[in-house]
Image (spheres, rainbow, N blue to C red):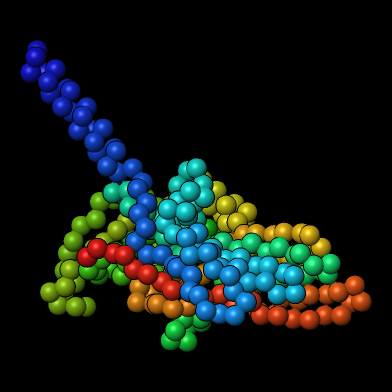
Length: 269
């Protein structure tokens, strides 16, 4: 009897340890830091955001790391911007910035939802609109994915990061000699959760920045979402092109708002 009680207690402790160990645990492994030096830009290094003000219009960008993205939703399964593996590791699926626009002038301001990110090598990315997420989460079906086992998990294909699939069987390993001799591949069976995908789409609808017209004293905010940057990307600039300012005489002027950041990798091999 004592032995059986001991086994029961041991099994309960083991189960609790496994559940706790697999609980989502976001860690900051890749993040953006603001870069000082551009004229007209105000940098808060501690908070990590950059503000640019032109013609009494202030626009602020704040990069969101894994921890901040994780906190966007109460249930991580309904968060379209993160992926969680079976060990509870939280991954950022995209490069995301929070944007806040404030019209401090007496004019009307029109901000286009299009934003551009340019890296040091000249690679250009456009901000992903809500329609991208709407299409992503419609008509999802089970599928099997095989990919090369990387040195660390940030070298998985981008298609894996964009996937709305969250649940899969335990992976197994085999060799694909006809593709790459003596190289190990992992195979995952992905099963979509339609209910979770629906909620993820709604979260994207509520958070993706869609621009708009701001009257005097108005404010607007949201998220600028870009494809996940390569791990070796360093300096980048985010451009909000041709923000329009229309005064009371209906004269228009256009200004580009530019923000500088540097991607920092803090991954332990």
